[in-house]
Image (cartoon, rainbow, N blue to C red; front, side, top):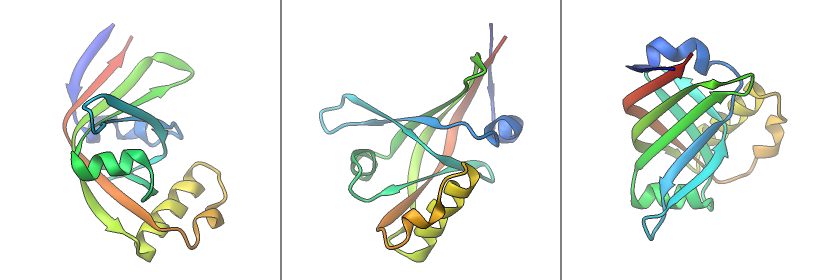
Length: 134
């Protein structure tokens, strides 16, 4: 096993795969809250998008620290973890809905399902990126 500290640029080809991510946030009681989310690579960061009523969104409003883990289901020994603080990028506007629709197209889902929703987009620029591979 090989672990290496890296950056988004070095793992961008892997992250452009259509893998989902496991997003970890801190709940109100400090306990970890994990959820599977879609994401998009955005320069040196990752975009995360969700409905405003999601628990992970509420958690980020209170505490922006986050960890995202992306693994390859065909090779579970290969994964990338990005940790840092997420910043609110867009909320409740067409931009946030467009972000959701772009992610849906990336994953082969119906982008129309997001029309009319109140959505938020967060951007994670990691403090640390760790890759594991064999």
